[in-house]
Image 1 (cartoon, rainbow over the protein chains, first blue to last red):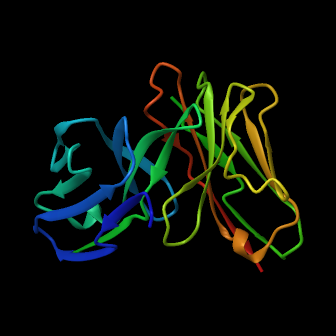
Image 2 (cartoon, chains in turn green, orange; image 1 turned 180 degrees about the vertical axis):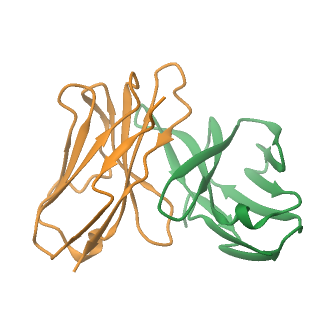
Length: 111
Length: 114
């Protein structure tokens, strides 16, 4: 079992729909990141969370430390939101901090 | 501010050949990471440098992979000899000491091993 699990793996929706992507993890963490990866490989950091909730534009990220679970929400989704969304947790291993990534959720928003 | 640069963007080689990737991090970023991302999976850390020293290379297949960052700036990752299962996108990222938690990623090098 992976240390970071995302669901769903693939999600297709119509423009305007409310989108939720989930991330569960099994290790102790100091922070959780949500990243966006567009075709061609470039990765952009969306959020870094250690507790509570953050909002940026139409994107909202929440984390529940007790339940080891985080969600990424997109309101009023748009075709340009189509990308792979990756959850990554920062954990301590062997004296160094490292990021452990989920497998990603491929989101497609149709016009 | 220029981003993380990587080259080449694409590379196709035959198995048992050698290949090298280059990364130039954001100016002033002390920490540099190499990740391997196999199709359909999230990135996996191969090696992490702090300046020119290795912090974590526990997941680097050292029998065939090597990496260096001699002057604490740009870095090269080499595979010798390549196997079919090395086909992946190789991502380089960097972070500053001050903003350790935020990593900036390069565009990646897509490697296909035939």
